[in-house]
Amino acid sequence: MQISARNVIKGTVVSVEKGATTAHVKIEIAPGQVVTAAITNEAVDALKLANGAEAYAVVKASDVMVAVD
Image 1 (cartoon, one colour):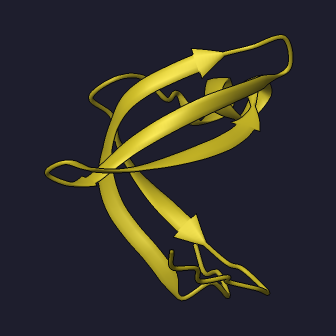
Image 2 (cartoon, rainbow, N blue to C red; image 1 turned 45 degrees about the vertical axis):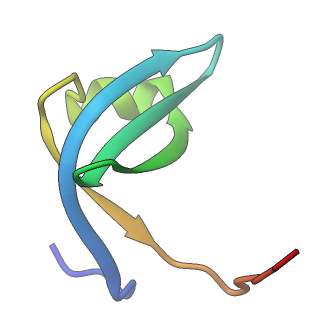
C-alpha cells in the first residue's frame, strides 16, 4: 500500500467505541500517548479493529493550529 500522507505512526488499538454510524478508535502510539480517530463502523469491521490489534494512525491535515494560554 502506498499513501501520500507522511505522518504514519504505528501503535496498538486500546479502545473501539461504536456509535450509531461512527466509531471512535483509540490507538496508543507510545506509553501514555493516545490518538483518537473517528471512522465509520463499516471501516472498523473491514479493518477488523479490536483491542490489542496493531494499527497505524495516519495523519494528513491541511491546517494545524497551535495555541497557548
